[in-house]
Length: 94
Image 1 (cartoon, one colour):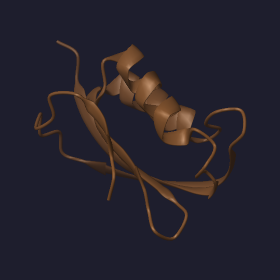
Image 2 (cartoon, one colour):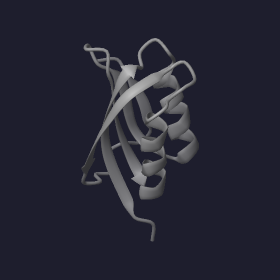
Image 3 (cartoon, rainbow, N blue to C red):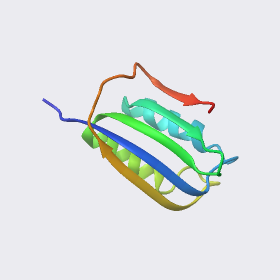
């Protein structure tokens, strides 16, 4: 059985207005990852990824560079217990 994982990620840099949330959603959907992504009021992007550990790790790696127009300066990752609470991956608006 594949192990499940959850990660809470906060991405800092030029990550708003560069298609970061939409690219993250597309990458998550390609990998079967559930959770959400949103812009934060301070200019960072926050996301929660749940799914197969290997695919969650791929999403964390994606967050280190993002879409072509992004300039990521840091990625803070907090590993959390898998909950299975999400049915899909969504973009949240606050």
